[in-house]
Amino acid sequence: MKPPILTLLCLLGVCWSACNTTKDQVPTTPHTATVVGKTSEQSSRTQIDYESYREKFQAMSVEERWNILSPQRRNYLRENPDQYPYFKSMIARYPDMEEVSEAAQPIHQQGPQETAFMESMALKPQTPAEWWATFSETRKTYMRQHPDQYPDFKAIIESGQ
Image (tube, rainbow, N blue to C red):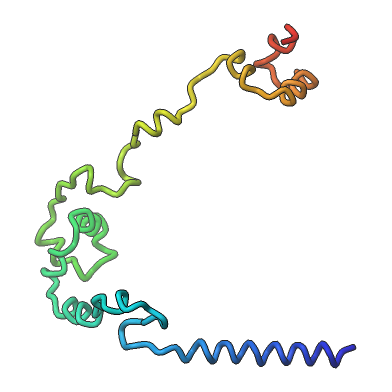
C-alpha cells in the first residue's frame, strides 16, 4: 500500500518542480516585466523607465525634494520633525503650517459626506404598524409565537392582525 502512495508523491513533486522551472524561464527585460503573448497594440505602449526617475530623485537636493511634496505632507512633517531628521533643515526654514483646501485633504480627515444617494438609502423612522406591513407571513407567525421578544409590536400582536 505504501509504494503506490510514495510513487504518487514523487511523481507529484517532479511535476511541481517542472512547472516551476518552466515558469522561471519566462523572458523579462531589465526594469520592466513583459508578459508573454501580448498583442502588438499592448507591446507598442511606452514603457516607463523607473531607473531614470530614481536617478533624478537621488540627484535632487533637500530643498527640491521638499518642494515636490504636497502641502499636506509638508504639514505632517512639520508636526513630526523628530521622525524625519532629513527634512529638519527645511522645517526650520519654513515652520508655518500651510493652508490646505478641503478637497485636497484625505477622505478620512474630511467631515461626513452626505450625498443624494446616501440620503435616499437612509432608513426613515417607521412606526411599528408600518414595519408590520412589510413583514412576511412566516415572520409574523414567528412574532406571534414569541411576543415577549418583540415588545414594540406587542399591541399589534395582541390585536390579532
